[in-house]
Image 1 (tube, rainbow, N blue to C red):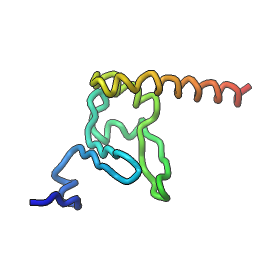
Image 2: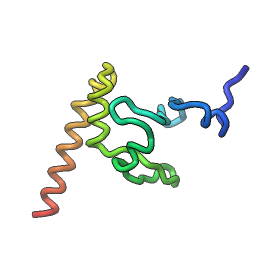
Image 3: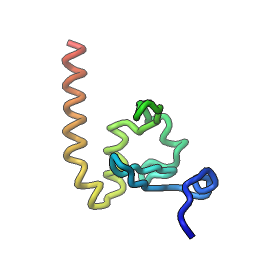
Image 4: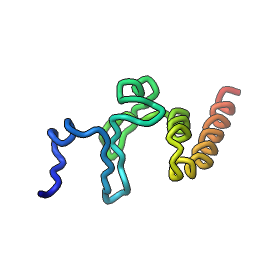
Length: 97
């Protein structure tokens, strides 16, 4: 039986990883260390992807949940994410000076 990606499938599932032409896309209904979608909403920002509005967790929350997940692939990403966070903080500091 082939996989059908439709509304009923999304309603029955919790987390999905899709392989797209532009890379992997995780659709997560629950995140280790972050809770469910509703718990994470206060820690999100609105971004546009290919003209579509999407809610994404903030960089600081992403670092927090990756550390909590503790999987090798998550831990490997921490150094780069923390460097991005430092870069953001530096830019904000310059803007406020």
